[in-house]
Picture (cartoon, rainbow over the protein chains, first blue to last red):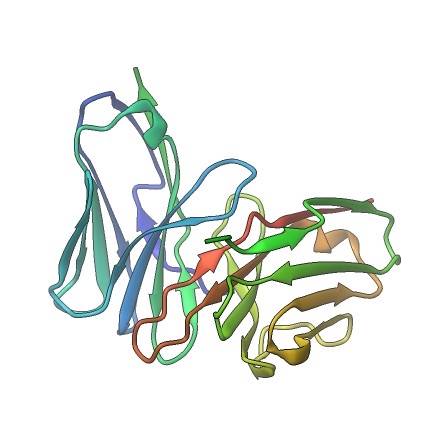
Length: 109
Length: 115
């Protein structure tokens, strides 16, 4: 099935560093969601974005809805070991959400 | 507030056997989704319900998969007969369905292994 392109696919970072990842689409979306998934668990909603250009924060996480409506960005500041996991974006056009391929984050203490 | 509940969490069956998954959404959520997640990939939509109506089942392999949401609350996803390629995690999600503010909240998933 169709999946959005997420970049990077995976990354190792040092504890305390900032992290940036993005999600791109060839289609325009009306909503972007960002999720984190731990092994053996379902995705947990982190941030929801509803307007082009919108910038929303949730603690150390900040996400932005791209102006073109074809991309979104997630930043994590001052990473900690529990930030380890897979981060998924999901974009909604008319009715259906399409998920990204995921960014695997590993934090080195 | 209780989250989305799914059962069983794990299921191992032999190919050609039937299997069923159950989902109880967050109380008050009108929208319910079933997703398939293969290893290393993002979830892919199988079917979406608005109350008891299946409004998008275009990705559901209807020759072997079926779903129902009686009374617009709990939902069951069935596979009959299961094939080796059906091994995956089956995720249920629900959302409030408020126009334009349509977050999805996921359950823990059911990990299916077909031998």
